[in-house]
Image (cartoon, rainbow, N blue to C red; front, side, top):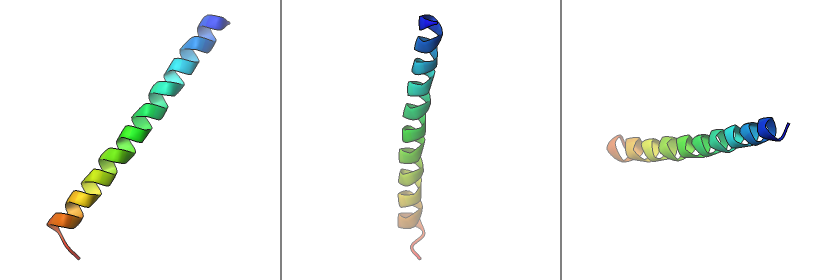
Length: 39
């Protein structure tokens, strides 16, 4: 039980970190597109 809980906790942490990183990358890409293509 402890091992499974630890693995699920680790996978959850990795997923949350990857999601935050993806949001930052998307925000940076959006900012870059706005600079290149001003509307």
